[in-house]
Image 1 (tube, rainbow, N blue to C red):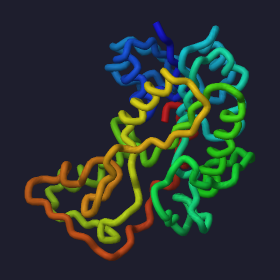
Image 2: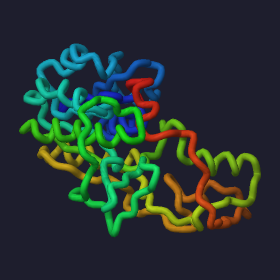
Image 3: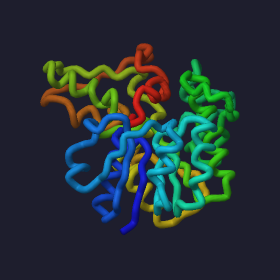
Length: 283
């Protein structure tokens, strides 16, 4: 039986990958801080939980043992994180690093976490320029998140081993914290019938369902290679239903109407993608 090891296996992406692989007949070992976070269906399907910090290199080495067919790292944020995996890669048939669209920059050097949002001339492809790598390890900031991801990618892609870097965008699905769909669910529960869309519903976000990302992981596991792949949902939401996650209409109560406004959205309190990553090895 093929064996997969998922670092950060109880978070949004990790649990989706585990479900996909278990259904395909894989043996799945996953790590995290709290066994209570493992979904009941994963435990019932045979997933084995191992309490371990992502920073505990010895624990990761013991878990891999004589090797694995697939290693999925959902918690690789810095070059140091990536380097910690290098001694283990000779015994892994295929490795996947979960990265982010935050690495990409437009012609002016702006990225998704910049004060000025990027304006791309067309589709963002894998050969789109990225921010310069940052080896400091200070990823917990708007400027540092994407730059440290690039540094981690380069360490793994330069290893000579079959590592796939998957760059996702605004991942949504069961286990997301905070849930990207919550704004729509909250309004439906409150019985509010008007949904305001900033910037007239326009945007450039192309979200990634965790389940779709998991499907890509299964495919690349069967075809090991060193490469970068973007991963996003097959259909980007369009105005006036532009949102990360399902269409607003799918969450609205009957009679809800969408109203667009030319005003920009208010500042978010959620922070950049790396703001809460180190609080738990399972996020």
